[in-house]
Length: 465
Image 1: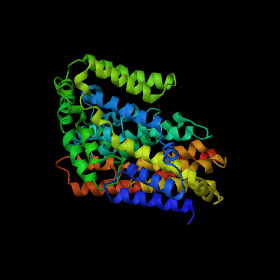
Image 2 (image 1 turned 60 degrees about the vertical axis):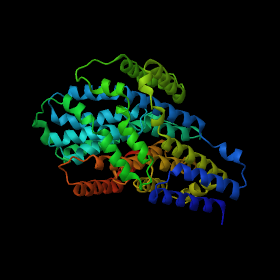
Image 3 (image 1 turned 45 degrees about the horizontal axis):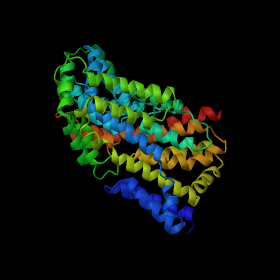
């Protein structure tokens, strides 16, 4: 059996094991890289480890460490209260506020499941109080998380752009970010219209800010429940880390006091410094092209010095499971390249003789597998496999990568993914969980079927014509 075929079998087994068992795909990938590299290809361990993505490791650690401190010192609570206060008594705006807040949180570097774990309990409690369709509210939160997920300093964005940067393909980080942002916004708009959002325009609400602070306390409960649900999902975040995401903002007494003590209280000095730090991260890393990892971890240390109590436990809240996942997968992809797998697969795609159909096939593979497994792992595996095919110039690379990125992440609405499970776990008490599960499952089925082809039509086909 040839090395490329054997490596594909190993990759398929890895995805299968991570889907049916509570195993981290990254850990499996390191084992796969070791076995494939040393046993089959005769590579030394130094050669295998040369594929370890050190820069990406620092970026993920830096941004998640920074965000953990922002949760602990109450800055996230402050931003949520401020955004809800802008709504006034307009119930119809509540779903859009939740969409926007989640998008901002992921855009500045938070992991998508962490953002959903924070906002979903708040959003769904609002849905129960103001008679908003819970399916609409939950999906608005998830699509908001995906809308911001491909910003140049977000984990998805850093992963995709880092892979492209190592190739000769034309890179366009902002195009990929805007593609995901606009696509998810349009889906959210359709959801809002179809699921009764127009009826909310005539509905008035009472005082919302106080309810936001109260519902914020339910985050840890919902996140822990989701963690139990996720143990067999093969998702990119473990039950422990999901629970950590939910409890992060309440971990320190300082953060709880800052976040919920007074609805009308002004921002504390650590919170103001945190907000300035997030702004500085965007300006320095994007405007001056400074490495995101070094900038984020520097700002995190400054915040830790300003408010030592708020950084207690923050290191434990770094998403180590995702760090392991991405670093393991990219190390394995490096070994795949040595095995000739990438050229083998890409050559097979190119030999189809139909670039448009090949691009659509890649999008569907990403969507179907990602609905049950890790979106990050899918992106880390499929994009390198598509690079040689795209390098032939038969089809626009930016459009295909954007369509693949969207296809592999919008399906996180699935109840088998981390985000979908978080929404299901935080369903209001008066909602039939079994019925709610079936609604989410039906919606995710529609997204898996229609999402890739719509993304393909919108992003790939125009570049071909």
